[in-house]
Image 1 (tube, rainbow over the protein chains, first blue to last red):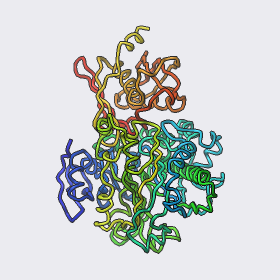
Image 2: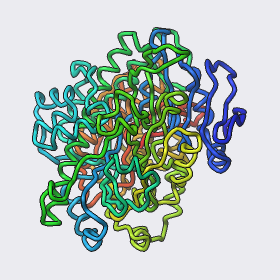
Image 3: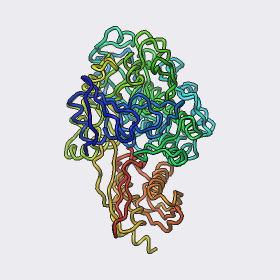
Image 4: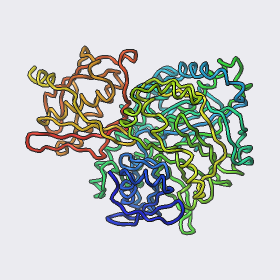
Length: 483
Length: 150
């Protein structure tokens, strides 16, 4: 199972895969010794090397420390291509769950306010935010016109429908809307799947979590983010649901044909792609943007449902509880962004497949409220350990196209996790750790148990040592809803 | 109904692949049609134990793929069934392929409405992927390997 590529350590936390066998650029993996031992055991390194074959890739094929074996791209992979030099876009570099992402909702609540109400809160959230396989019906089935508007407007559509406020949009990556969205590029099947899944969590590793801020690492930035020790926050992790999966599936077909049309050679069919500037590339970008916007609308609606549920249980109002969106990031996406290469500003197509944007202080795309300190970077860990809010840096812009890790990263296969969980009461184990969990599927709980993941602290530590993203606060889970 | 009888004799026997992020299956079958039928049954068994799924819902399924590309046919076939599962909310348990010509698969499919209270979900499969996909014939044995995004 181990990768076949040579790895060369180039600094404390950076390893290089030298350019060989059709690679256009080297590979670069961020990891310490311990994480590298995990990474080297599986095929993820080969996948980093495979991505380096993509036409028009610039710099290096990058992997964040939460890298693990995916399909096509590794999870935790970042690749930027130059459209002006025939650079390609690959749906496999985005994934099926287009704009899977995380949002963190901060509050004025303290741990003491909710200490005895966690089971009640989790039960209410479980009732009000549909979760699990094929979950639907959060807000009633949409009509076609509404879905068309949603595809174009993203999170703003949800705000228009009464789910949140305009202030939320300022605190969402890209304002919760990619402007290149074109509903005419989305197929009928995706439309069919998208009509009644807005506002639903889904299954797998998606979750809704109640956390307490139990550690502050950077007082100044935490204060700019409005986060205090002992404060309560809510995390929502979900994406574009069946709508996004179908768009990825449909465009993989388009790209399979494009690979033949443009005579593109690839080491893995799942990397199928087309030049960004080709008709196929443009169509995919327009359709992918619709799915990205769908995901932002989805998380926006879920946040509104979450706020209402919390206010109901605590018999208060959302404003009195100070519930406000800290930030929303996407970690499965391809975007056209401006980056500096060899002293010149260029537009690159940056694929982040299980990686988070991490823009620094002063960047125009960081909202006004945070521009002096940098973009909040949300890094969820496993349900029993902790998560981090970090902040982007200038080094990220120079080294990783403004990207960092997106989570802990799996270390155990789902099948192995299931075996390890056999005969155990995971809900009880979580409860003993002080985390109240409700899950739609028992298997999900087994697959998502803490030991199935790398230690998120180690992952975040590597990014900090490499200077890519700095820790700001730690979130410790109190209650979790799993799909 | 010879095809149906042939399928009913088969069990969704497969090996689950140790893939870190996703779920995969490896299986063998005695011919091309069986390989496609069994892959479908095993895929649904990854979602929910097939012993708990009846066959009161019936549908004729038609899938178009590239005739010269078995991998494409397998991905399209499984994708179509997952699409039907999500949009019709039916779990499928029985697959009888009645035609595989020029890249067009026609099959009688049976299953029952998904009931979350009765059907224990084991995994949500987003889609079958081309990554490490294998569909090969070696003498009288067809080997199939599919990794799904979950």
